[in-house]
Length: 186
Image (cartoon, rainbow, N blue to C red; front, side, top):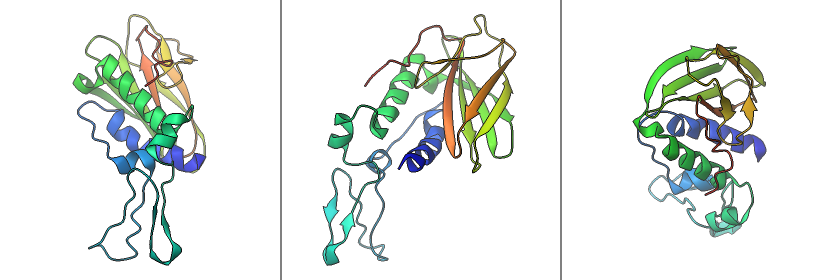
């Protein structure tokens, strides 16, 4: 389940970690899979809770029902919600993509300028193994770098940033943003 969570955060990260509008569906939030049993005319996708199907099958959700996830401390939906709140707070939707950087095989980073100063960095690792990415950073007045989700500081000398990214994982980094949004809860 942890690997699936990381992979889904990687795929949703492309929508969340770049400027512009973000659209998320209930299927995105619960990890629902279409179990139509080969008949596309009758899709069976659980949106709010698991459903029983004929022949004893269950239309399940990878991350659980929304109500159950909201009751958990660090559920998938709470991680997505925190990212969306932080994205809104720093104005990423109105941001401007400024730089795309490649790294080790399967890795890349995208820097977006924020409208009120600073940058949002989206780091993606599509490879099967953890990677360490050294990346040049845009010039900012205060070279403060933090993991957007956790709020933990990241080491930067104002010219480069080193980010560890797990296999099939994404990381979101705030650069030059003095406020720590890592504790922001939905």
